[in-house]
Length: 205
Image (cartoon, rainbow, N blue to C red; front, side, top):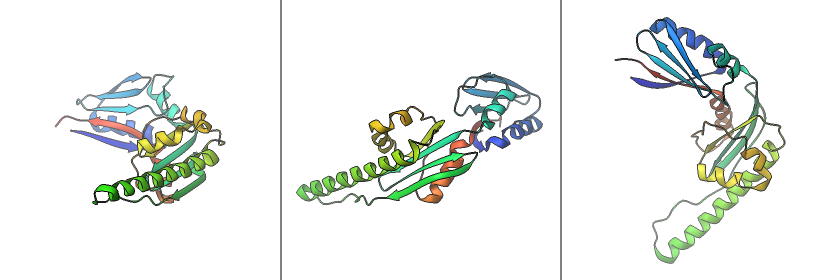
């Protein structure tokens, strides 16, 4: 049975200890992008290294790596809304969210359908332009270590094409977050999710 769990950076060391307590003696296979814990009963846990590569290839090296305090920018863009936030030590330091109305699809055909499509495309462009300005104002000057994005990939790509965000685009790292329309609560949760450690656990039936 395979499952994916997420743990906060501060809980990773204890989680790995608990994995050994549940499944028996553990050996670690450590690479720059992952740590694999192989237990005596055949269970495995693959920890994806966030914001890698990992330099010190050991369990202690990974724990120290995830506990480093980073200034993380979060950029969320969907057709109907956007949000940008700066996080440090798990705290939200600066943020801005907004929304733009983007018309839905229509069942009408012919000229009417084309008119709706043009209007929808124009509205989407206005929404992405607004998201770009927020990214320029909130994220670009924030001296970030890493940027995590979410929402709609095409929308994110459109925003990051702006020349003023070239440096920011170079800081983008996984994961890409699936989110609802970016309200303030969604942005705050995205900051937590951006820092979460993802572990793929596989244990025998």
